[in-house]
Length: 297
Figure 1 (cartoon, helix red, strand yellow):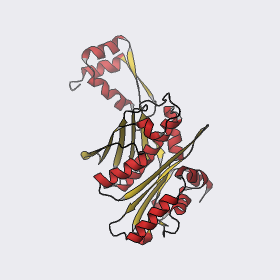
Figure 2 (cartoon, rainbow, N blue to C red):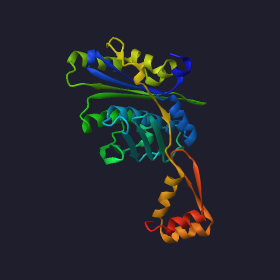
Figure 3 (cartoon, helix red, strand yellow):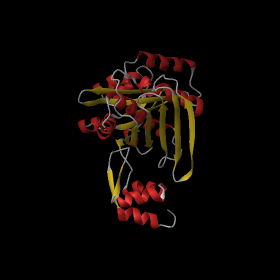
Figure 4 (cartoon, rainbow, N blue to C red):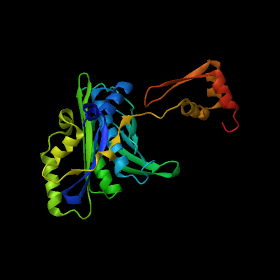
């Protein structure tokens, strides 16, 4: 593999234990560092959102029913200092996210305490056809990877293990990645035991991702479990990509009352900032006036 390719974020797939297990893994270091930089995240916020972004990318592929359009949105809405943590991704490898309070005052927080008690909502679908499917689970405070493992078991009836890791350094995100190990119904008790033992024995995922490419990370974690990667031509490039646009930023202004829009007009216009990427959209009084004049506004 070329050195540049080794550094690029990507999703890979494979099988283990003679086809008893499906493996999906992602290297997301650049994706999470982009999120950290764009959203100006404190380390614990980068850790939380990085795990959520990685999880959303893995689940978008794992739960895909439409390989071109499938998306997954994860909403961690807890009572911790971070507030809401939202990550969304599609099966094509594009992800974006948001943290309500990106810089909590307590620098000693870990991710479970930073999110707190509350609800996990998982929204998935394949736009534009059909209504998105939403599942909700109470957060147990066990960590993002464990919450997603429980979601897959309870809501999707998928027996799996989710491993996620983010490593922060002073200069930014040094490593991020994740692995989903899905057990098929025909998996034997012996193969399940081997996989479970390897997961217990494996070092923290983020330390492995910092040292080696994701292909070697999976091989290391699943050593002795007959892991075989699917042809790299099936790899999916990953990135932090925001789908915001001037049109999408303008549309919510139609939901404001006539008086509120008139106030914006009197002030010469308004500015809308995308919460996912920080991009600023400036709308003139004329833009808002035209919106008000539309019959369906």
